Length: 85
Image (cartoon, rainbow, N blue to C red; front, side, top):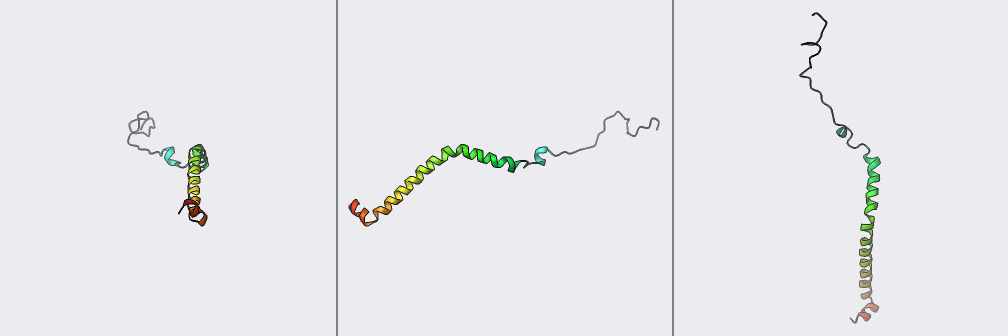
């Protein structure tokens, strides 16, 4: 061949029939930074929700403890006499 071109159809024609595959960076490193950033994110979100969770829990637990102690007191000799049983 004159000109030394190694391409079929000439050196300036686009190649066809070659398929390349590439993996997405998000799929390649799906858990990149999950432990480093994830733990701090869980702590941050938990502390942000604490004011909404802790007070109702404390109120509920204190009511439970009060009622349990009152129930136990009513089942003593002194509590039964006070209640009029």
